[in-house]
Length: 154
Image 1 (tube, one colour):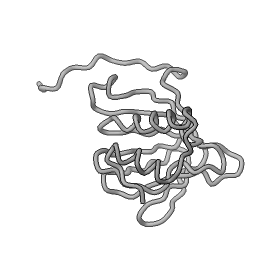
Image 2 (cartoon, one colour):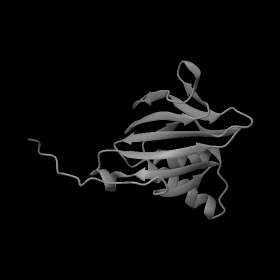
Image 3 (tube, one colour):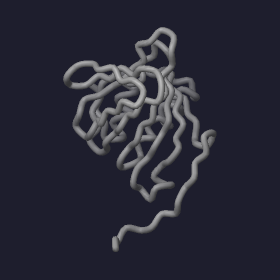
């Protein structure tokens, strides 16, 4: 028996979720902390061809796991860049350097990203809100927004 509160099963259909565009990347938040009792968050994201998804950065308060569904995702790590294809996975645990981009000229990348604990999806909401307000997304602004969620830009 565990002391953790029970969380009812959640069914999320293919078209369900919270869609957000942030800095050229389309996010579809399928599960957030509200759905999972604060255990994790899950999103499907699409990176268009020739698009930078995220400059290298380090999370201090959460882990991220990227699982490629289609296309090729180029991931920057402390050991250099690696190219992930369908069914490849990278674990970007707290303290690890990572960033990603789509280096293809013609094929979008679709992937899943899981956050544990959840909450980092709010960063993407903040980026989306800044763009919607007409604010220019500078490196300094992105660093400031990341800092709110214990993330350091490199």
